[in-house]
Length: 102
Image (tube, rainbow, N blue to C red; front, side, top):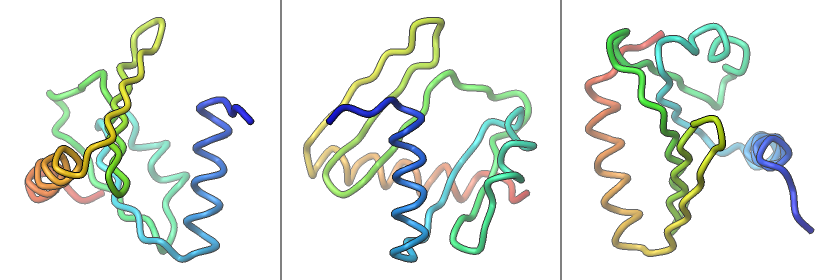
């Protein structure tokens, strides 16, 4: 069965909530209102500086990295490789430390 991106995100969120999976999200500052709406006890959200607004979204889970480029026609790259996923996790952790709490 194929799901739209929005349906997949909703299913993922419900799964995380049911299984009590903690999620760290790093948003563009312009999405602060949205971040406040989705925040819950299992979600920690931080923000990039106001002068940094990337057009990309990166999701990392186990050995998968999904990179979404939010242009008029969104583009998705899916990489399935443990070494690449670990590299992106390290990159995320570095960005997380440099980001600002809400």
